[in-house]
Image 1 (cartoon, rainbow, N blue to C red):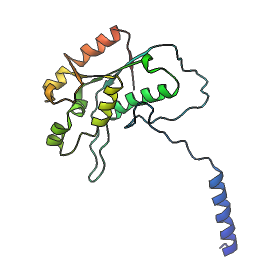
Image 2: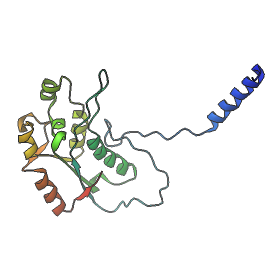
Image 3: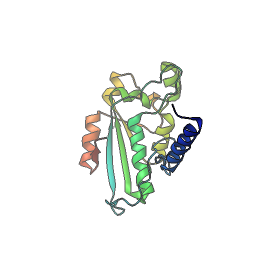
Image 4: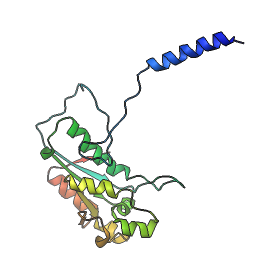
Length: 188
């Protein structure tokens, strides 16, 4: 069994070692989207981010936000958060906002995340945890398009959507049209 002095020396050594280990980088939000889209800064990447091209990207959003555990805090839709991450990381890398053209095509269980707060609260007993993020994405110029088939089949009516959300005939239609207009489908 170690003596008190040996234990104190061991404790001091372990503490010194832990203090000398750099802390892991922490992601942060902004500069475009502040309510989500936390990213890591990547110093001196070896694959340069082109600053002179237009980024036309469409994201397929097909999973609804996960409900909060009992007593927990609800969070925004993870897939919509990915759109925010794309905006924030490219803005930090120096890509001009005029060169970023994003669309999010929403269908399936994610449709409910586009409901306005009043409707969402009436159905689920809480404010829409994705509303602030959606409003920021729309303000940043992101097209958010709801599948009309989801709207009709899952009772997500047009007049109860967050203002600015568009309605398409279907997600398949919107994805096809956007890709025909030069948008690349992001698989994340």
